[in-house]
Length: 244
Image (cartoon, rainbow, N blue to C red; front, top):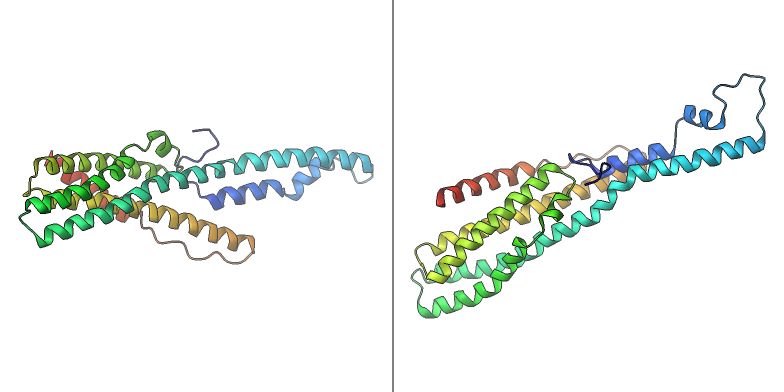
């Protein structure tokens, strides 16, 4: 991660507003650029001097603004990483829901039931493995420190849940199956919650920035929903720690 990238959840709107403030300097900065700050009332300045000074200052202001806005380039990568989590988690959740429905109607699975469950698991397992394969480097590029930790924790929980459920499916352990599917589903649901809250926060920032650009009052801040995900992660960590 470069020195210019935010490491503690710096908001996109703040980055842009800082860049704009840099690109539109204060009167004192303009006076310095024109060489007027140290001139006396009787001193003169030529048109060429004004043009030369402004051209040089403009180039520097552009460079400063570009440096300030550089962290926004990471947003596309962050959204891509969020998609890497959300899509397989959503699709796998639907398949696990079907497995739970089968179990609810047949508490003691027959061979036919196991066959149907096996077919569903054969579809769900590769999707869950996609989550396992998400590179840590992609997660580490996420700007917000807490969001990075949450997704890293959820990836680790996913790995534990899929290993446990896979073993239970192989052993045809009907007694442990409902709980294992339920835990796997909770992990996937929490992943979707974490991604949803992050995208909602980004949308809120963009709306606030648009309002700021119009010169009107900022809209109410989005509710702090990250704690909901944090508590869900802690609960899952405790449960898997107990099961180990």
